[in-house]
Length: 271
Image 1 (spheres, one colour):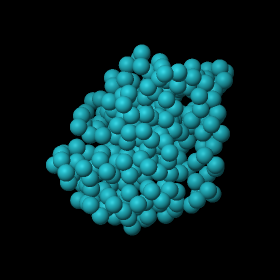
Image 2: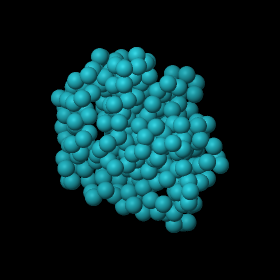
Image 3: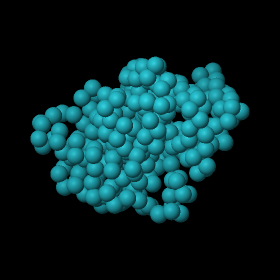
Image 4: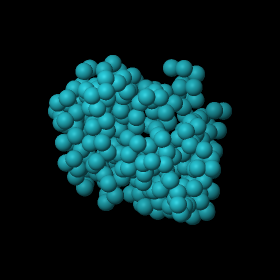
């Protein structure tokens, strides 16, 4: 790992992105906070260490768009002025990603289950039509693995040996109506992806060394799936592991507490 992709540097970047993310939501009085917090470490690693200029990312869990916007801003792909328009009238940064406004966002997503089909189509085009070395990453929620379109796309990817496709599942165990295993059980989750022809690994989605090991494995002439076990609301104690923060906006007091907890986490990490 390089200096900027060492776990300590990545942890510092993720904390900065969480602060910016919470500030955006406080200003906009918007929800979907827990969903973004579970994905920020994965997004941080992708943009700091994995994605190359020719690669593409599809954020299939479009309700975490604000986490993507904050990450793009941190890595210089979205200006402060652009970010300040989040969730405002006329913005190019709505609650779910929209194409055309930001170069790093190639497709609209958020109607859960169609992000992977888009990513698979792109990977197929790069591999079989354009002879391109570009790779495609697709960040899914575990909840959208309830959708048949996700598994149709997975079958297509394996059939066409799309080894330029990497699927990351932000498996935080909670979706809009409750805990994933209560809504529609997915386990044994890894074995399902393996049965569909993917090279599968699992990791702690908040441990940068584990994320690095999972994404750094050699390609095996088939698509890859990394199941990242995460915590919804990660980093803010009263938001963690609850469905409530799939929806709620923050009060001023809650925002202050959330920022104070991030400050404490930074002191403990880097003392």
